[in-house]
Length: 217
Image (cartoon, rainbow, N blue to C red; front, side, top):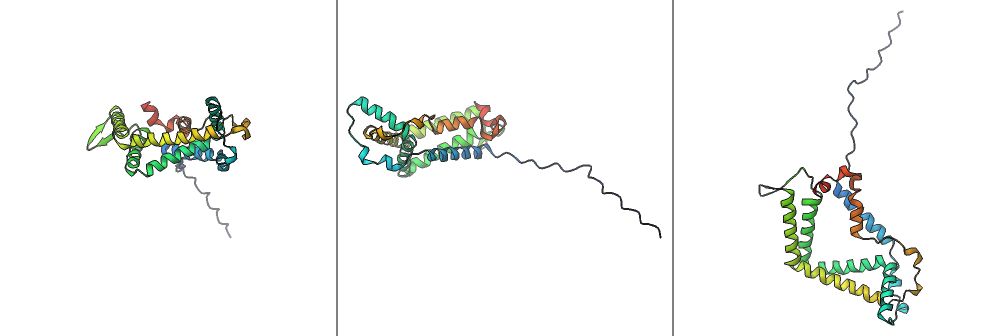
């Protein structure tokens, strides 16, 4: 009985499908993630609020120089807490003024979506008219001036900042810092601006991920 021939080996696909490459996340999502991580790390460095309201540690400063020294030392130690207080006062002021909050959010959204994170190859088209980058930034600057100086947004922001900074100065001048450990506080200042500067070179993992920003600078 003749043996059956063995089946031929399977042929490899001469044109294999290319492996799908994962697309990098949008720069705006990376920016929001970076800001969220920065805020989370900042809150992890805050001091216990019980130290802020410790009544036994308050006393009247002896002089203006003593008050200045206390403010400097207390700010170094309670930096994150003080920033949180100012942000809380600012948030409450905006929530109690809905119109100012809506105008400010709309202005920030305009800067973010029409300029900062808009791809450079996608022009702004409004009512069938195409605007260049210079015209877009000109409109945003005019809108910023109108919103900040010709509406209640500017007065709300200035009043809230004055109240928040005033609370910080009063607390810092009356809080005796002798019981605070200052050796571990030699850290660079933390803030939104520093995080934005740090993220401008790292959003998207390189220069290719921020073509819209680099093209307009």
